Length: 363
Image (cartoon, rainbow, N blue to C red; front, side, top):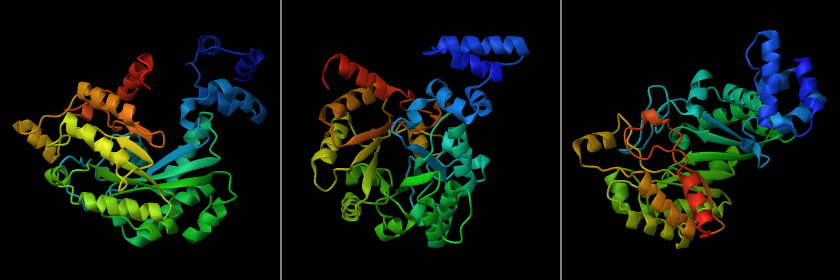
């Protein structure tokens, strides 16, 4: 491996093809498989590693902003919501199938916050990523519905994972993290509009809240048994903004009762109505997942899911009207296609839309 490292460092501006050729020569010589980039980085000295990272880092966009995203998941617990579209995996929190990457990592680590953080840090470091600054995202059901003691314990254990040492209290863990190697510079909590507690979120160290808004129509929210109203969305947004949180809305186009016209109007409302105006959006087209009430409706023919063409038309309009101050963080759930019974399955719809808009010079 030392010889391979020397070869890689001997030539500047290596292409992907040239790197693989060096790997192939190494594998042929030692009658072994092609070495992984992480294996090469692991075998290098600290000085060599710094140079190798520039062309061996795996998926560089993960930390291109300078901040690593560490998403961890709570253990499966009952959720206060009864939404008809929400999946419930065998070993995953409500709203997850159990086959999402974050859910599978959580299962491997028995939903232990400390182990999940340590495992993810190791994965990122071994593939050449800098983890000195991290955004911690708490996923799984409705986190604030857990007992307050459970919430504090889970967050404390997560901070302990970043600190690589266990603390007595959450406050101790937060204090240690201020000067540790892997600092938490942002903490995100996912919740429902009717489960918002700003003072508690601040005590946990949260800086951003992801609200499961889904729709700005009371009729549609009632159709899907969401359990909250648009008025509660507005109240939660106001309360969070007054406490200086960044706010991210989860929005679900294609819910029962919606149309392309009404979905476009919904986004216009989100961007213009003072009651809303989120800092960020995650746009999740409605998907039909086996085991949900929506799946039963689809099988009976009482619900027709949207498709890729629908989402392309909708996203095209969204990008045309989206203000510069709104960041669209994600389009499409992280659910593997084989577990989606109906609805958009392509994971690159946003890429397709942006490419066409740039080609036509509409954005």
